[in-house]
Amino acid sequence: PKWRKNQIIQTTNTFERVPSIMASVTPMQTIDDADTSVNVTFSADYGEESLVLLEAHPDMLETITAGQSVCFKASEATDVVLCTQDKTFQVKHADISDAMYLVPPTAGVDDALAFPKGVKREIVGNVSSYFELTKASPRTHVLPTLLAPTAFSGPENESDLSRDAMYTMNRLEEEVQASVQEIRTALDDMHAFEHQGYWRILQKPYRNEVLDLILNSAVVEDWDLSALKLDACIASLPDTPDFVLQTVLREFGQVQDDGSYKLETRQVARFRAEELLSIGSGTWNLGSFMDSWQAAMPDSMVCDLEFLRGLALVDRPVSGAGDGQGTVTYFCVTALPLDPRQRFAALFQARHEWLPADIAPYLDDLVTPTTSKEKLLLKFARSFTRNGTKLYNSR
Image: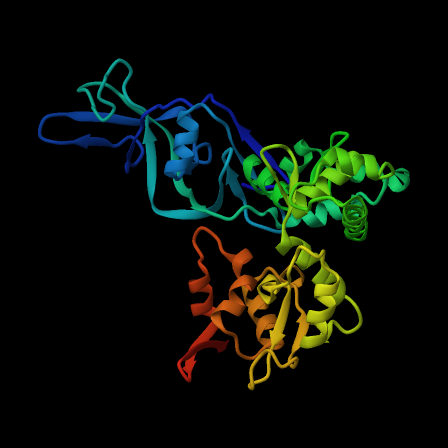
């Protein structure tokens, strides 16, 4: 089939489980055995291209038999995918070496494979290829790119944005090659929110400004950062929209049983670290960075270098840590290529040798249902041991 850009072919719950038998035959040929002969002819509406076989993956088949819908999603830049309500499958076209003619079962006969004597059978179609399905990762990495042009940066800037550039959920379903559930999960992971019918994200500088306002208000009002109340934030910051405050609290904290938000030390620490690392060249003396980082944190929160995984590279001198030496360099995973080969090239350009624990956070987003971090490392890196320590370098 020729797929056009962003084409969706929706199938509904009208699937009929009609059994068929496929026999390799030639026109007007009879099939003989010891007991019977069957006259097989081409039907009047026979069409070679009218039928297509689709490999029935168990998860997809379960969806269809449950009466739910599936859909094909196509794009000019990528392969076709098939989506259920919660899974995505890559669709590949495969040829069949032998001609396969489809003969429907005989009406009124329970056994679909039976060829009653004297009953003429008609060939209704020929299948020369089929589509095979492989579980695939949802292609939700495009969401930040789609939502970034209309990121929310304050009520005063909304008039500058065109509604035509914004995305409803229906439009996202049309343009993103992923299931509905996978799209919603990705939106939640990136802290997107629905506002006036459109899905939006916060512009990063604006988000940072709002978090600063919340933290400053917490100091002034003597709020407990483990039990921040949304109502209190709204009352203290009346110029900031309610949904913005809630989005920031949701991104940097966890909602408690009583509806309050507990700010997470790791999230706040990474926010402050990125602020510092964005200054100048992005490289700091380790000791100076730790002092500035801790000074920027609330008194109740303590920094830990573990919080920098996937955000920065920490290089210590051979003499060891704790002497104020070494460097911290900004190196964020979100800025790296999504193509695995290009990702590893960027990693080994930044650092010739990697410890397993250091490289792992830079591979998490490349993992798919069929590709683990171990497989990626085996394919694109070489492991070796030095002084009892395992390391990876470029192949």
